[in-house]
Image 1 (cartoon, one colour):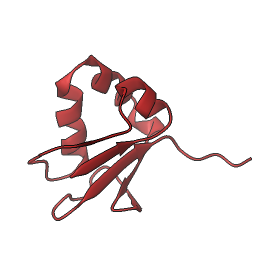
Image 2 (cartoon, rainbow, N blue to C red):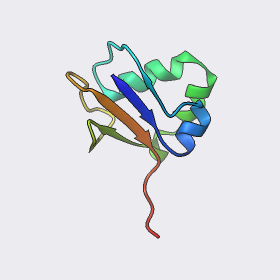
Image 3 (cartoon, helix red, strand yellow):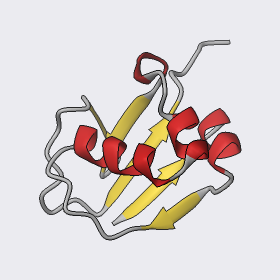
Image 4 (cartoon, helix red, strand yellow):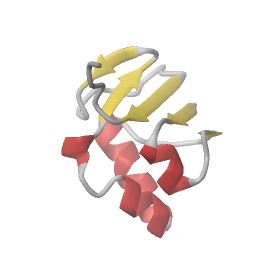
Length: 81
């Protein structure tokens, strides 16, 4: 699946996107796999309250299932301006 990172998440990880193989059943399982990779991922996912997630371009919660998903995107909450 494609995993996309936006704004400061991308800055901390150092990648705008990557394609990964995962056995994660939910978004939270994927986050745990990513955190375990290395420090930059652990830092980016240290405070989930400051992150939003979209699965196949639909906003979801971290307990959303990943079966059949093609894309997961992580980004900070949007602010108006």
